[in-house]
Length: 371
Image (tube, rainbow, N blue to C red; front, top):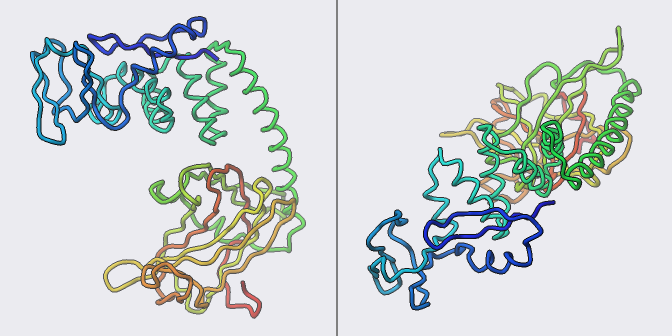
């Protein structure tokens, strides 16, 4: 992999990319010139350094700068200033949406400052605008891979190769990921074929309604796909849910509709977990409240990684749900089951990616051995 080394000129804070051949000469200087993580830094011509918050980032040719310090403000003549190093946060705040060069420079800074999440966000913006060179496309693929979003990373590595990328590490990683994908697809197909061994069931809510991904404010990203299996009278529809790793605890799919669950007070479905070791699964519902919907979440069931389907049941009448009113302790029941506006199925994947298969999702009268 080509190492990106950032050098900052004293006048314009200009970034220059250097190859690995100059690593020993440039690395220490680049590290010294990194922008501050929390405070802006002004270096005077006599070598003195002053930390604070720039009232505004100075333009080239500015006659003076104003630095806010704990005791007030300091106005410095530009003639006394050798270098201005704005903090990363300050530069990110002032980055103009259409400044492609600024996005790329700050992405490099963020990588050197070990702020991969910020670098990833900036590179994704450029990629969405088709303003990312193939060299930097590899950096995006690498950071995406490092974040745990391997499905997205695989697509980026493939695009890099398609555009003529020749970096040996990138191509080796792509080859390995494609081998893993082939094994995974084979196992997934074998799992899907096992739907024939399930008890004869009618297509349930996996086929009759549209399940959607929950907002990424609350959930890791998901992708749902309805797959038809078998033929003739044995045709069966299975909901495939691809969950991506992320910063949230769980990935969530949502069914929004109006439900009366006062009599059909058990949620039942078959689930197959071929990828993730000890995946926890829970459900949540929203019922009508006095002023807004009330959220209730169940305890989680643990599904071990295996090649079998498992039937799980969630009893909606137990006093084991949590809500804001219970201060998020699992000790309350769902009120107003006659008016439910939302049902969620939650997969506690955290930093893991994988696929879960669902079949026979339905609501039924409570069974005596419900979970």
